[in-house]
Length: 130
Image: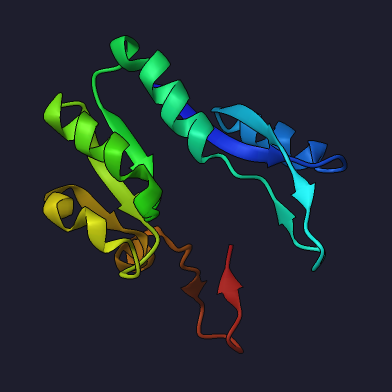
């Protein structure tokens, strides 16, 4: 199994990129640009769609991690070809365009309890066991 991460490249973030690669992600970089309000934009939508279509014959199922309606045509196509496993969204505020694909949607906010690190209480001054 391969996990691709499409991410804007910023000088100075090499430690982050190295860490992600050590976790097993295959990084696909996009140049970034700084907007007048000093926010940084690295739009990766086209890269995700293009890369998915290039790799189409090389995977059985895809998991798309986004709630952005810009990916509607990709999700629709993958469903038609029986290639979509899940559409992983951050919360309930994902695009209404995905309503026909609600059976594929998994919301990260609903998994919070099972994904967060829980520390054991010792009962001694509120300290936690390692």
